[in-house]
Image (cartoon, rainbow, N blue to C red; front, side, top):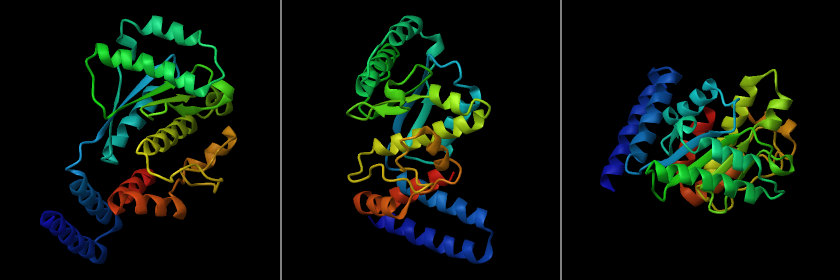
Length: 247
């Protein structure tokens, strides 16, 4: 407790000096240092990203996703070596034959495959989230869903590619925002839900795929969502999320 108080006092003094004498980039570095110290006692939640039946999951997208490890301390993201897995082809074939209108069933089947991969690779732990990025058609033309425990997430990019086929950078940014949104949802912050669109908040309810592009470039956390995160989880987490979304 006293150690944490000391950290806050030192960070406050350094921030004051930085704000008076130094440029804004230096102030941001000090802010990041303070958040890092606050989160140092907490093990990050492990996140494995699988590009399943997804030839358009580019190296550029993977770099964008891995870069998120430098921007936040809540999650530790890595990319599964899916293509080298012996059961990849049979698993993808089984998933491609799946016929369902249920988004939950769709996610559950992907989670089963991802967990099978993890088990064979001896990757275990309760604090593990799997994310599949796939080009297989999503039920009801949707683009993302999760399992009931929120430890399995599927992002469908087929519709996104068709809408923004000549703009792969937009698709990558949309996928990033979806990943950010779904991972923050996985923290089970009571009351944090998708809301009517505000053209910018990460948690805008974007029923139409064409609307989701408005929550990509200048994304932020709206006042209502900020209030919920602050009241339920406290200032350190809110600051970490806001800094991550600001990128």
